[in-house]
Image (cartoon, rainbow, N blue to C red; front, side, top):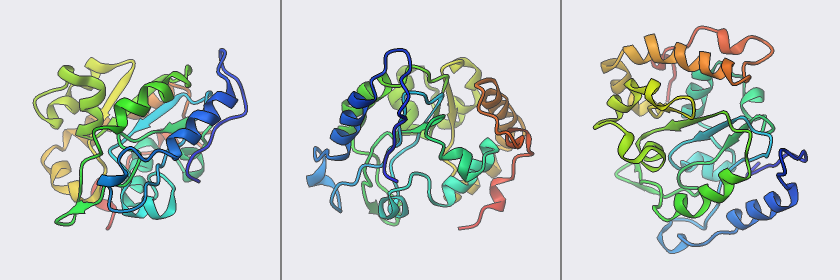
Length: 226
């Protein structure tokens, strides 16, 4: 599913206007000339969502399926959050809007950055339709640069280590890509200290699963395979 919206209305949110906004975002061609394939924006929003996940941009597999975080990075992210796929894709509770809505392509086997035109164009109006957001996960340097600006640290590690400074609105995280295994190895405090705090914040936002998923022990990033 490329996008979804709840039929409920929250503090004046208009499902029809939200549907129109999502339709406009999905039809966007602003960056088309700079993309390797036809635009396929991937997002999931709902006026009742309480958690907003902002990553970088769809990868190749997500572009092909139209399902956000439908790849090994998503598998690890769900383990970090202690969520099943069913819980993670419950759009009534969790919205997913990447910094760049479309797959930007690759260079030397690495994904290109999200297109710079995208976030300023679509994040403000989309975010305005979700008044119940309690916490926004900023995954990776691009999401942190857009939302935190000069408040972020000198490095991604500095920003993640200072996660307390950005609460209650934001929680910065590294990207859960298997390519970042070396980063996780060099920063063991992330799995030891930050992930338990993340799970606590998820519980505080009322997003802990009925099966107690948010209280399961985090699986190490080294256990996710390509």
